[in-house]
Image (tube, rainbow, N blue to C red; front, side, top):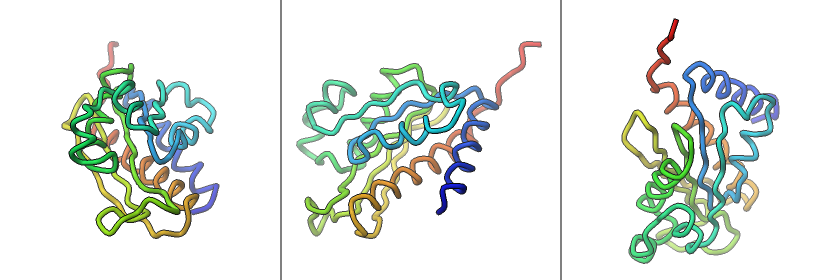
Length: 172
């Protein structure tokens, strides 16, 4: 994907957010704030981005997003359960209408047979729909590749979710 493709996708997301009057917040672990940084790379993004939570450690997930420690102990930080709790915590602790969470194993170390390098869980919470999770295993082509691929997947998930948002009613 070229820089022009990425910019076009971001501009389309911004236009969709403006059309639907939707504001985004992010809750990130393995991407370390790259989703929020990518969203705010485009002019006018302040209309669509409320805030980003970078919760790289488990204590940060608990303190900033309210992810229960028991959930982290039972399922691990890289799990659908935690991705869901991160997204819901960001929605509850922001002025956003939709949130995206990202938790995974970017590598080069840390992978196991059950949770390989490249495994990323996304959570998406929206004011108009039930929270859902999405699991992807990206090729282990290096830490940068996994993180960048996760960012673009997050943009796609946000775009598809926001398309389902109810249309804004005109007050005229």
